[in-house]
Amino acid sequence: MSREEEAARRETLRVQVRLDALAAAIGRDGDGRPRPEPERRIVLDAARSALDRLADPGLPAAPPGAADATLLPETIVANTYAVRERIGRGGLAEIYRVRHRDLRSDHAAKILRPDRAVDPVLARLHVSEARALMALSHPAIPRARDLLRHGDGRAVIVMDLLRGETLAEALRARGALPPQDVAALARRLSGALAAVHAAGLVHGDVSPENVMLCGGAQGATLIDFGVVRRAGEALPDVEFAGKWSVAAPEQLAGRPGGPPADLYALGLLLAAASRGERVGTGRDRESAQAARASLPDPGIDGRLGRVVRALLARDPEDRPDAEAVRDRLDGGGVFGWLRRPPRAGA
Image 1 (cartoon, one colour):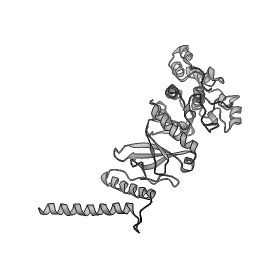
Image 2 (cartoon, rainbow, N blue to C red):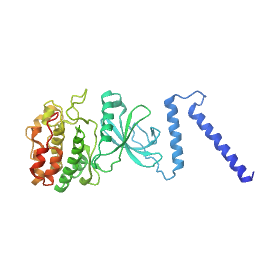
Image 3 (cartoon, one colour):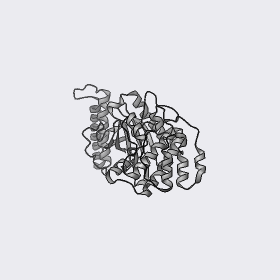
Image 4 (cartoon, one colour):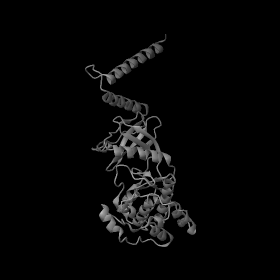
């Protein structure tokens, strides 16, 4: 055996000894007692994360996490995705940017906040959101890639990573959108709703907070399917899901909103985008009903204005469906209005 071969053999043995020591340290604590499974998993994930960084020196260092983030940077989800940073937080869930450990691709991961995950209704809705996103395919709807489980049992929806601001943020920062952008919003979102409704689903929360402007209005994307449901069905164990500020009159009357309720919310959204302020707001059933009694003019002229006013009809049977909205915007005449499906859950 040559000197070089002997040196390589000794180095291999040294590495093997270190790996054996690492494996022992993962499985047992400093006193030699077996680690509890949750603790063992944490140590193993930390070791794998360190090895990942050694294998990919170009991987940027994880930024500091928010003080109240429930997933710290470098947390490993389902042995596959490394948490990089939190990019969003709502009342029910958090959104993180995660990186696939082998493919080195970035994605968004949505997980219920720990204090919400113990609610069986919310946990069920979270899984329903994943099922809905995986069943839908449209440029204005984010694609779900996977539904995984974190070590603490919470479901994690892995989906496309969207970059941009919400419509609500844009309106607060710059006010009303130009007419051409409002029209682009109408086309993109009516297309997304047409896909949702064709799948027999209702989004249930079409609002400025749930529209991402990815590269402007032309890239508007409908997000947050957290209260999605089958058309004509009420959510079990939930009296009302969504926002009172965008609820349709039939929902305020206590009926589950079908696809026409999504279209009413779209009308409110387009009016808000045109005016630069919310139309038909309300924090509860009573204030929302009072606001609906005298909606201000949406302030939109021409063909788009006529469509928005039709979307805001009090009777759900008088509203166009999503396909008809696109037909009207493209000058398709009255025939699009005749394709309205039978009344469902309105």
